Image 1 (tube, rainbow, N blue to C red):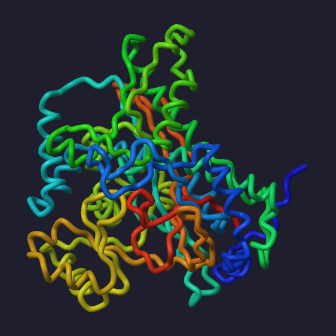
Image 2 (cartoon, rainbow, N blue to C red):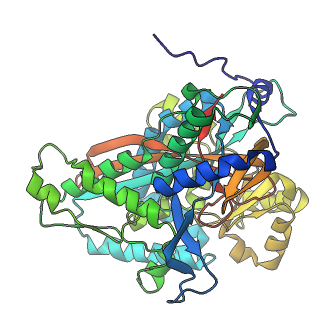
Image 3 (tube, rainbow, N blue to C red):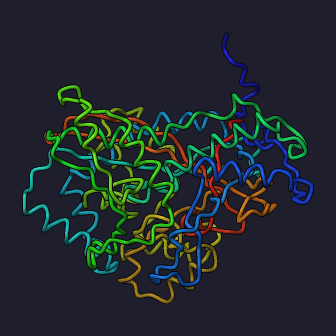
Length: 477
């Protein structure tokens, strides 16, 4: 017998109408808090506690843990769009792997930035020097995440809701374990409480909460890459490094607030026992695995990081560029369909037109530098102020992107043991796992689960680690 999934939203008006309505009376829902916090504490849904000054000056207390910021109940995402971007992820994995291997394309694309972005310029210089060394690599491991907002403006009721890509992450791909745990939390709360007193209208069914394998899929991918090294004498060492630290001093950070997220994935690395069939797997080899200073992902190679630059993503949106890397016309169209307008801010005619648009109509755009993760973008009236404060040469370090119009939704956010009613928007991330051998043959190419981050509607940035959002899970409509 197949499960009934109910009516599926196909238009913006249907999507908006089919969403449940949650009570915004936080006082009447205080009984949920103790249950939620206890569940978080017993299931590892935790972060290090913030403090003004810790003993080592890092800013985080090493011995104190607090519940992670989460949404009390799941947030609505159109089922058709969710399934579409999940199915698209292997194509995106292959696309960005091909970009990272195309030296001429990386050079022609990133040289236009010049010295406008010092960080990217230094990474690019490191990439060129590394390439000259011609070091053989037995494996390439890519842990990606493609992020989307649902474009569903109320002013277009008969249009279809569409998942539009915000960015493609090749390094800022954290929260793989905590996102899976939040999905389990919402399933537990539904079974335990039925969301009584919270759900004022509409429906939440277990069949609307998709399974999330982000923890295990990423662990299996890393294990597969480890197996390609071909020696049980090797160890996995996954460290938390920011790329800024790699460029500056290669120091290892110890102020890792995502301790539990890291540890959960580390445990999965150890338990998975996965390796290619031509590599021996036995208890002795499995027992010799070592994961130290673990993080959700290993730092990717420099070519992968450069492939994730906003400039590369902007050039991809130009006619014919996706087709250079994706041979199948239908797959290329599906990739293109998830893009919004992306424009250069350089000295070209197109760049000067984009500059004029940003100055004249800033409310319709986002200005983005060559970074991943939250906290770097400029929106609305901040865009003219930014562009007028930097030179035309420095503007090359940015791109301009059409603003995606995601609908607001009334939710309750659980932060520091308090329920905060808020109008929110949600950003959906689909993880991707890519492993290939030294000859470029594909070993693993798959979608790897999902992450939903939800933030107050007035907050433009979306990073959980940066303090802008909470972790959530999708309710498929």
